Length: 174
Length: 218
Image 1: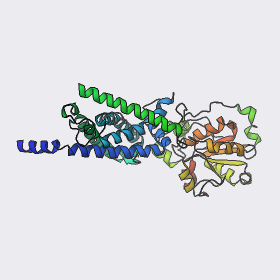
Image 2: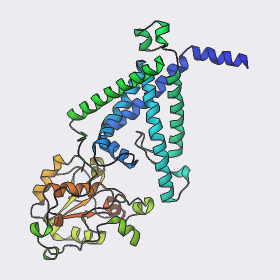
Image 3: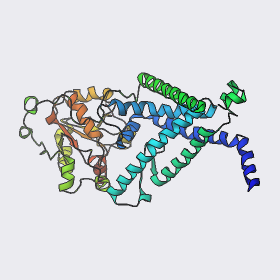
Image 4: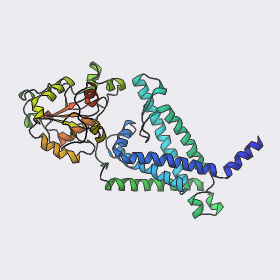
């Protein structure tokens, strides 16, 4: 058991899992953000469908559709280059904590309306990947949440611009 | 504690950066710019025109179809939904509006009426351009209700003197035709000349009606 722990510890200490998690999350969020930026009105309609924000005054819905895709792009870039990447991971945790329950609630509504199995519910959740089977999307979001939390709670700055700008270990770990 | 403060600071910085870039890009982009204070989902027109001032009464226009109840929620609860998509989703709570509807039977009469060939009935397709190119009601003009500026002036100019302007989108729970009706009325078209075909492209194509492909010729 101790041998297993030290083996796991050694892999974590290489910071390679952290780097892989950052690159993976960055790729996902850069892709999703760029899909939304291409057609803002499609995303605006999808945000509205969640019924989380009032339609009047319209500034809340419109500002969300204007800003959110860019937040995804910027967090993706921050994770990729390793600058302010824990803040980026925190932003992703917040987005997932807001939108994952919203997707679940909408899926339950659609399930009730159509009278179908929850595992057959599929719609375009505005996530940038088109129509998806929702239980797989929810499962994926839980995975992304675990990765983002792992990055948020990590201590290493290896393979990042943060380490390049601030190589002192005691400050870097802060 | 120091780490938490740092994370919150970084989170704030990324947020401010996203707001700045998001609104900045939105302000300069030519297509897809969202107007921050515009309610794109308002169904009723801001400047409703009294129907008895602008246009003749419905009965005075030859072949004008009888308006059907314009609350699709009420309709859905009292009769069969008019499209398979609406029946499937049951999502009709967004579909209330204040515009006259034309049903499929009346639409065929209008479509086959020689007046339509003479341009006295105008069709407006409120779907996305790529869907319009794939197939639309012959003669229909494509106009995006979210960015109507480019096509709206042309439609208003052509609508001058026409009997009906018939707006459609995908059908089912699609609301874009409702928003297009609002844009047309706000642009000056009288309520009584604007008709909404709720069955939309889904119903039209399902009934193997004539279709035209390609871009708007206007």
